[in-house]
Amino acid sequence: MNRIGHWIDGKVVEGTSGRSGVVFDPATGAQQAAVDLASVEEVDHAVAVAKAAFPEWRATNLSRRAEVMFHMRELVDANRKEIASLLSKEHGKVLGDALGEVARGLENIEFACGIPNLMKGGYSEQASNGIDVYSIKQPLGVCVGITPFNFPAMVPMWMFANALACGNTFVLKPSEKDPSVSMFVGELLKQAGLPDGTYNIVNGDKVAVDRLLTHPDVQAISFVGSTPIARYIYETGTKNGKRVQALGGAKNHMLVLADADLDMAADAAVSAAYGSAGERCMAISVVLASDAIADDLVAKIKDRLPAIVVGPASEDGSEMGPLITGEHRDKVKGYVDGAAGEGATVVVNGTSPSDLPADGFFLKPSLIDNAKPGMRCYDEEIFGPVLSVTRVKGYDDGLALINSNQFGNGTAIFTRDGGAARQFEFDVQVGMVGINVPVPVPVSYYSFGGWKASLFGDTHIYGPEGINFYTRTKVVTSRWPDPRTSRVDLGFPQNR
Image 1 (cartoon, rainbow, N blue to C red):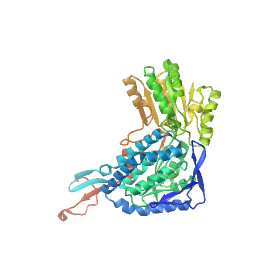
Image 2: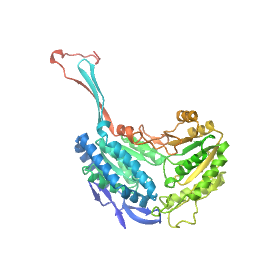
Image 3: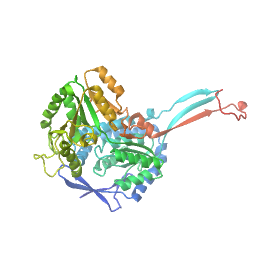
Image 4: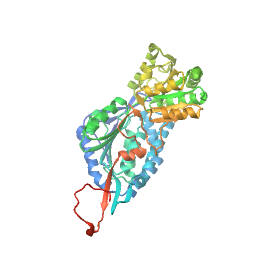
């Protein structure tokens, strides 16, 4: 049985806690590895190593830090197939989807390559007679990333690239369900020239998370996951004096107006709902269909589902793989099984796929019509291959449903009307908006994040806001006076 340890001080370290977790092969349901779960003492050791490495890395010049990021960019690009294969094997997503994940993560490393420009402050000459004022950005110290199972390559890259480029050291606590990608990335960072101890990994569960949240030497924590855990991370971390950004769950709506291209809208809804088996925080899980076109749109979506090839990532032609665990598969199945009893219409039930391997964690796409607020299939984040359709009178009705939802992660509108699209962009209370784009994940030089219960904290992740999160600003007021002008003045400083 393959054993996965920790990555501390530039090398693999076997766990000493005596506890381990199971890493499954989602395509077969069999255990493929055991991952060590860190104790409090092991977390303390990783943080101590990161703290010891901070002074030297912080003092490293910007050109050298950029050079490391450039080397890392080349290594990730050269190894993208191996990274994608590793995450497919442990997560279950098909290879094409995994390669897309690596590509989007790589964008964030490319962004961090520009750190000499990104770390520039401001300078005001002669703010007062003989006085200049300028600002500088400085790193925080030991920063922590706690990442989810659904993007084991991309989300850590969202965090560590900016954190390290800014001069911080980093401790990653990846999901214990698929940790191997992070371990491989640690090896690549070492090859890129990152000093030992600057990037560390502690695999673990709540024991490790709670210690990181309360450790006195941890300065900042970045988290992506479900809303209840995000709220806990934020409240616990901030209570212990940490800077925290905690991205939570989502219930992303796609509003389809009567004038939309219905074939385009159906293609987009299917792609966004069932990609990666629906295990994406930016998946479209609810289509708000205008009454005038709802029947046609539901029919078009239904017609596309039989063509989706569901199977192991290792099989040629597979478009949608299994879910991450049997427990999660059964939870998703429960939403579909209970939908009819709540008054919804189950148009396609993909929860009992007889033509797929019985041992894997597979579901086929499910489609639910007439979903309404108050039903579990509408209210809760399912995180699986289930698309619900809610019928609305038009723009105002659809907008009201989106804005009244507790989540505000992503949304989309499909229409040919530029005025309606612009008004939607203005009105909607959601952090990321797509106009005829179903999964509006921002490019790396913008920032990712939702509103309402989809984000706890003041800054979004990666991009310019990521640089702000991993630095603090110092303002310097400087004078090199002529000694002849010096005098005692007890008044409050003023511009003269």
